[in-house]
Length: 242
Image (cartoon, rainbow, N blue to C red; front, side, top):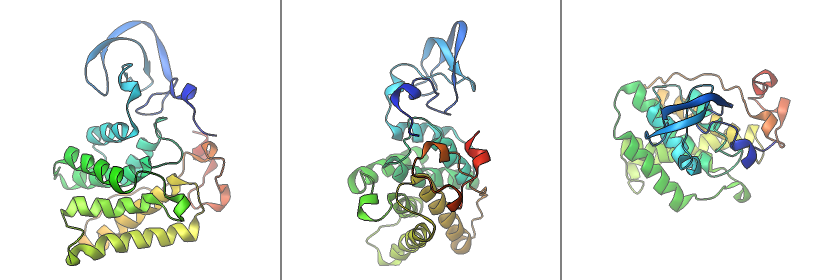
């Protein structure tokens, strides 16, 4: 079941929580632009999004959540981002989500923020130029390419430099291999989980960087009409019903 525009209007763009009508208007701050407005509704987490900011592109959702986050678990952060109803079940937004959440988690874990906002903007530029649309029709997945984008921006490496050529290719290859083993077309959420897991394992083995990582339990199965259900390594109906 895909989320449509009418559903988006009744859910919070930041957390996906249900919007609630207030008994009286309340002067509050927009969670995106930080301007004050008289609000007639907020979500259960007290987020308020002004009318102008409701029109933001998915990258702005990703950037806002990441820049406000203190999480060091990239799976947990990815799930938070993907719960936004502005992030569709499938599509190129996942090419951005993978590197953005990895950059954020590493930045928070190491306490080295490394111009995080600037780096996420660089993610946008790279994806817009090189992977602007979903790659499934090419027999591959752009989410896995996000791992290479992460390494380029995290290490500040030049993709034309032979010495740094291997890192991104290895982790992308490992991710695509697992996607081929466990996957099928049309599940960007699963492919994002796989790529993050492979990248975290690569960081541990090659950089002694031990990011905390939770076991992915998919929240999105009931939204995906092509879900493999029990044949997917991340399927858990209990989590899908939350």
